[in-house]
Amino acid sequence: MLEKPWRPLPETLFSHETKRRCDNNDHVSVIVTNYNYEKYVTDCLSSIAAQTHEALSLVVIDDNSRKDDSTARIAEWMEGNKERFVSTLLLRNVINQGPSASRNTAIEHCPSQTIFIMDADNEILPTAIAKLNACLERSGAQAAYSQLIEFEDRNQVGAADLWDVERMYKNNYVDIMALMRKSAWAEVGGFSHIEEGWEDYDFWLKFIDKGIDIVFLPEILCRYRVHGVSRTATEAYKSHYDLEIIMRYRHPDLPAAPQSLKAV
Image (tube, rainbow, N blue to C red; front, side, top):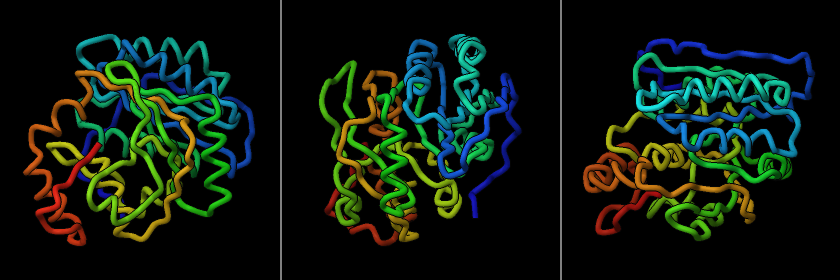
């Protein structure tokens, strides 16, 4: 069952559906979470529009940005690019709720049974959705992820590798930019809010808890922006010890100390 604590309904700032029909097996919804990323968000959205995979819907949720004009910029972009997608939707949280609740809300509003999740400061290469979708179909797994390249403050290939439970128990090397079945997201109860961070790590550990199959595509398909204001670069590192305790409480199969947990 989906973990769904009370949260206010979001505002709908933009909504459009084309008359285009598509095969349910091909239809993918890209979920984008935005919070004060006006500087980056149109680059993110343009990378989605450039996908070779045709049957795409786009759901963007803004987590009550207050420091910039993100929502106006996104709505303007959607108006100019709406015919590219099966459907486009822009939601805005009426209060700031954090990434987990925002993702859950956006996924609840997506029209397809396959979803791709990303944050508004990241980008994907043109063949990302097509190749990950083919990988998912071919493998029969419930989620697929690729290698990524880090850019901006750090330029290097990411740490993604073959899915290995024992290695995941030691550290999270899988980013949330992944293609998955909506049913798998629901089976693990969606994303859980963890005040100090590591929600992505917790999400993948719930896949392990449920025995859900995940597959790795060893090709660079995603671009992960490393910058000083990213949540990974700030909040999570302040509470490492507390987060280890939380993770071990939530996932009893994690190895006991002295092995220190790490999350990207």
